[in-house]
Length: 276
Image (tube, rainbow, N blue to C red; front, side, top):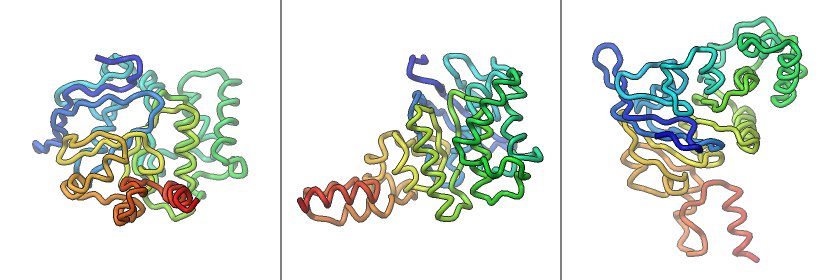
């Protein structure tokens, strides 16, 4: 069932929490390599429950999840973290060392890597996430945006095949949101496979190759963000809001302006083209 381009395959997945709370109902999904796949939907739609199955944090009630064609239940913990890394919504939940450098080194040490490789990976991650000036600081002394960067770096350093980012912009100020967006774009440019769970529609519009819409534990749509956000009926039925720039594009009667513009830069380029 898994093709060469599919890193994660979800096959008829269902999950029921204690108390007979049905969170997922027959999910079928394939996550392709080197893409940014956004999982969107209202609270309670099943987004986080779904992605927690990708690295074994949750076990299927029915159905299965395959990583490179092998069911997650057949992986050892050390093996599965090499496949799918998970960055929690609240970074504090996954930070527990006394310095930034130790925090980033923790994962590679647990993978059993040689000391020289650990040092190189730590240095590469510190540089990539612009954390050099903070390397000897306790993680909890960092601002919330920087803690999120550290949490991503501590997963990135293990070189997983895919990374799940659960609500990466929650609690961020404008600067922090810009930092998160830039980081996602940089990881995307490196060919990383990212799964983005988010209520931040402008972030999804700016970074995702694909948007998977969930409602009541099921997938209701799966397409490029341009198609998703320009579908008024879908937005209404799932109680989602398109980015403001997309709504603005839909207000123009000029046929030269598409009604599925996703970003301010895209709108600017379109208007500049018309002006010339």
